[in-house]
Length: 379
Image (tube, rainbow, N blue to C red):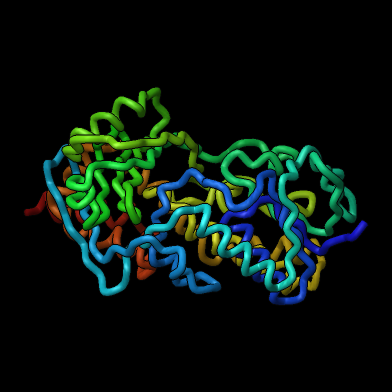
């Protein structure tokens, strides 16, 4: 039985990017997936520019449309703000094609792909043995890139500490008239869902329309999806396919490495806490895990330490601040509405800057808000 240096469970952007980085540096790597690729992946498919800047390859062949303008609506304020940039704020992809593009590039560099193999259990030792529905695979390191539900994290002993939110996404074919009208820009509608937002993402010949809620509450997302269709003034649904899913919008609170298993992407809880956009940090965390293993010269303790250092240096502080902002934004609507009323365009521009990778969430957010409130009171 061949022993790999690294086994990656999952073939999404995080896992495939990690595999590509490892293979480029001569690390023997296998990707294990439970399906036959390519396969549909439930996701809005909006790839923001900050993620695009970190891509290890050209993705133009799988980009269905690019948007340099974004409309941001606040229903409770009856207001709309538009932001514009010289680079595409959001590029639309279908995840089956997008993910498979990265996997194919990784294979070109020598990565082994094992398909239709569901991970059933793992025997942990100096060399890990992954027991799948088809075979046993051995590797020194395991990277868990198996999504929000992450069976590998459960097998390795992680308890759930992330904030996991529900979302509902539809791939929708509409009339030519409605598609022409709605395909010009991306739009986000805050308060179209209580404690959440709705989105309309134009793809090549259909719309990706979804709703998500960020607070822990019982809610019928199907009803709010129906209401959102009315708000979009869609006259005719030619065809629609529903996909329910969950998104972790806070990072795990204990560790990201255990028993030589490295958690990346949604398995770790690295989606943006305010927007729930996950592809950017998925790719970045995959690269961090790969770099840590490479730089450690395959020494487990060193690799784990390096991975945590890389996360703490950039990603984790922003996620923690994002959690605070998200809680205020979605749950303290009185304060949020005051801010939007006073600084709606500035807030929208700041959110767009985050999507572009031009800024991060402010570390002194609470102090900044307190200072602004004092200034408003004086006025």
